[in-house]
Image (tube, rainbow, N blue to C red; front, side, top):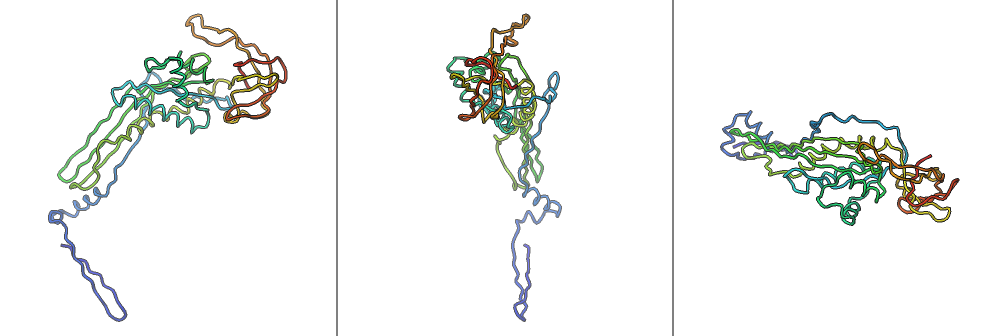
Amino acid sequence: MIERSLKFEVGSQKKEVRSKFYLPHFLLCLSPFTFYLLLTFAGCAPRTTVKQKQAVTVRETEKVESKMTGPKRRIGVVDFENKTTYGQARLGTAASDILITELVKSEKFIVVERDKINKILDEQKLQQTGIIDSATAVQVGKILGLNAIVTGSVSQFGVKTGGSEYILAQSKQQVAECTVDIRVVDVETGQILYADSGKGVAKRATGSVLGLGTRSGYDETLEGEALRAAIVKFVDNIISQVNKKPWSCRVAEVDNDTVYLNAGLASGLEVGKKLKVYHLGKEIKDPTTGLVIGNVENEIAEIEVVRHFGEDGSVAKIIKGSSPSKNDICRLK
């Protein structure tokens, strides 16, 4: 039993109030130090730790600073493949969602909605196995007018649970680890601009003393935290690698001397900007690999943006040269 008294004065009279409360008998047998530990652990909240680690690869991709500036590039992200036996398709979808969020937050890209990409895949019957290769990515990217498209996979994922148990105290730790691989494909040539692997680790620790404290089952939020830790490191390098190439857009339509472009206000293409228009001829292939490395280009006109229309379109006038055709490519002068 513990007794507590409170003394106070009311006018000229002194009063005293006594109160008593009881602790469980076994607690009275504890030493002061043990009792302190009890209070400490009982008030502990679960702790979560998230770490980035460099995955084991041949060589870590260094960050490349690009000098190219200008309007935003158009980029798409397809659903990542889950190569692990954990989480079925959920992990791949979660990984691509995280990357899309981070790319949008960077404010460097027009990120095409994944639903539009999946719709093209279904319409063109390109997604037969759930795996998107470079050739398929290029085909989809050209239909949607993308500069680059990102594919990837969750190659490793695991959750470990450990802990310790003593006479008075118990602790438990859950650890989620994952490895994510990505590839950024240049839609125009089909070449891989950037490839890398990232590893993320998320930990959650709980503790209790004499049954008091935090108890928990499996924490599913660890999956997302580990994936985010692995993916966030990619964003700066994606920006640098995609921006190495000069910005371009396409002619969407031509009406007499009026040229409509598939880039405008959302892309950051300013009114008054002048662009050169090129007609793309036959493909140029690498004689060794057979890969397309470009096209024969013929400059046909110079145009100037006069106004924007819609969410991301612009109207231009021809300054010199001949009238362009739909799908001709435009680059900043």
